[in-house]
Amino acid sequence: MVLPIAGPDLKGKLDRRDDIVIVDARAREDYLIDHIPGAFSLLNMEVEQKAEGLLPRGVPVVVYSNDADCPASGLVAGKLDGMGFGPVFDYNDSYADWKERGYPLESGPPEV
Figure 1 (tube, one colour):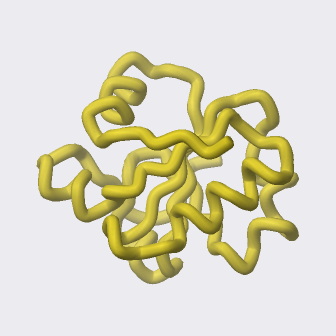
Figure 2 (figure 1 turned 135 degrees about the vertical axis):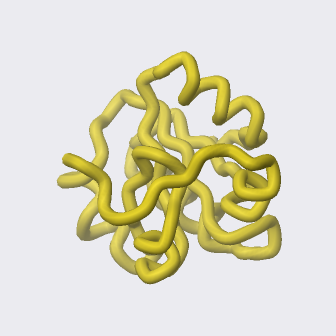
């Protein structure tokens, strides 16, 4: 089951350095401009091919996209949950909410 998560809760997890994986389901161009710190780019059409090699098992996964109207986070979260990752959380308010709150963003690909 995919669970909801709010921006302040995700920010708290990052501040505490909780063991989580963050997935950015937006277009790769948007991801490269900026994204939530530590997020991995994973598009809906790539989940089945790339999730196994990219994401660890047994670690909470938070998925976000552009904003509450963008379905990408829910689609990716549902696929990851169905593949046995998680627990999986959908940050439905997504990037727009994160940015509006003034939370930190980073640019470029993550260090792996």
